Length: 139
Length: 269
Figure 1 (tube, chains in turn green, cyan):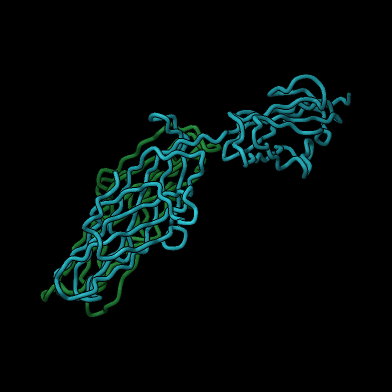
Figure 2: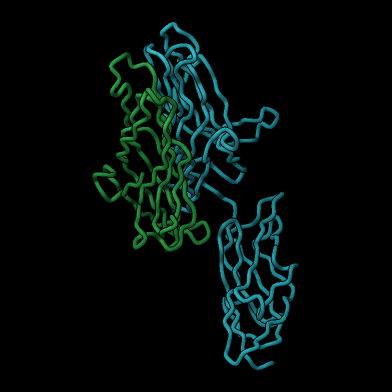
């Protein structure tokens, strides 16, 4: 699942703050990205069972805007909105949501991207994922 | 302010970010304020809480999760303040009982975690957690967190690296050398090294062929009580070409790098 933080249909209120810092090492900027990704990630049908997993990629800055010198990052992402019992006429009795393996990287195409693994169970839709990515760069 | 945990006594889960959290990491930024703060640390990760509801009595169970962030505070580091966020990272339900999943409050504080060493202190994230659901049929698997911590670090930093021709003149940021000259360097810190410690500086040359740094000079230690340390003569520089060479010498200590320049002329002295 590929989303772009600068597309309001993909990410609600995708924002970036840039702070001047004095290190460590060559680091002289701290970038803070926040937003709510519209994932709408639906689990498998009840007839199939189990869970469904996908890699979420949110492009924070495309290759033309991404920092040349990415140093390090620390990223937070979590369930922001979910719906359970979706499409199930019986009792809302079984669901599962998971957001894990969250990180922000300089991607293979040169963009700066947040990555996370999403999992959902039956009768489960992970509607939105909130995030904050903190990135040290040199510019 | 720490969370009021007086109502969260049904369970306590003690975790260590080094082994009980997924993608646990932190970044550090050198800042200038507010107040005395000169370090901002941002810790993130996903803690393996793995707390299931343990009954079918429809009661909400409230407890605490304590997560050691794996960041010991030395005597030179003072905790200034922290702002922490935590939320549901992974939750599940398997039956039709009423359910509750909550991270009601979270905070990060310095705590003594070693009863045998009262002086020891490290950063601990504490969360007030609630779970309700059918027995073993509902639970919180993981809790995502971000702890933003301001510290005052009074340990010295590397202030400068200066160089000179071995035994000649003053130490300066940039020195002219001739092919075959030996040279030496001087590190200066922002303050004296605390008692019982030493400050390590590693040295690198941008041109190891023409300005080699021998193994004895790669890793340098400034001893306790000292604010600077120099070297003995380093291997002679060489200029094999026809044009003057500029070589950058980089010293790095505690994540801070400083540089000096060797201008190497082609003509032997």
